Image 1 (tube, one colour):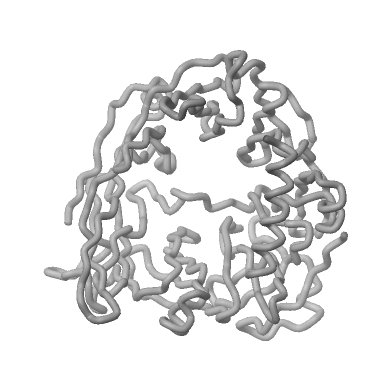
Image 2 (spheres, helix red, strand yellow):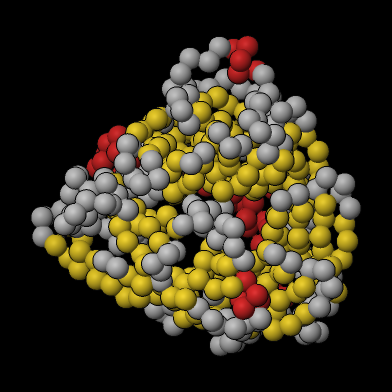
Length: 433
């Protein structure tokens, strides 16, 4: 990863100072199954013609929400938790009576992996993506390798369907076509980095490459919709970046079925804050103080709201926080860093109004109440409204235990209409463990 860090560090420095190649299908590196050359050169076919980006908070059904317990067990193992919407309680994903949830008999317990995991829901099964933790290779061995695990929605029938190598990591965004899982696989060999989008069959664990990302130009997957991946990068090589002292950002869509690429957006360096919503890109232009909507299919660009902030606002302290269900949400920190305020924009009318639902973390920092997801089949959101202090026991190398204070998130359910009206009509999720 040293080369990746070096390249992006240089690009970041240039961006900071300036603002306040055709890629072919490739062969897999020792894939978990044998995929011949002819197969690997064909564009990947998506199952249902629709790619869906599995954002944070997407491990949700009409009945409940899956998450990882932020508090580890004393042996650094972790537990899958479940928020039951009917009882409005957070519980361990384990049906065993009198279970302590710390031993191998627990259905929701996962051994230490070093790099954590992300729960995903694909095709009525629970999928865990372990990104990998190369810095724990010596300590944990294969347990620290990237892997994909599937299981039933109740946590039973766990199966590791594919394990990658020690020199590899997988990265978000995780994307599905309803049957398969797509992600970025990075491989470091002899201090050289290779980055590629791969497609993983969730029944067999077999995977094939879809597209090799250009590391020199900082290409990264940002989102996906329809048959397309949205990829960002810079419009020149590293040598050109250093020579010119400027960076041109480029966003393009890659059709995963045909292999065709099309540039959709090329903003000035450091000028935009962006959120993709399906085939639409909403972006705030700092130079214009305006919110735009760009249709990634037609490339039609329209201004949604002019003069989002009052004249004199320090726009370098503005955040584009969220965009969903007809609203965009912005945050603004005062220049003395003492105050934090928010503005919401109606995407249909361009009308602006204050937004006042906030939460405070254990450090006293004020942040917006965070929407994790809309509950399927409803007009309600699952939201994070604060933090609770808990003591975590950690096993030391000498066998002794040490207790440290950590945070456990507090969740609630709220009607979408109340949320956007800044009405704190929460149904708080209780801890039932």
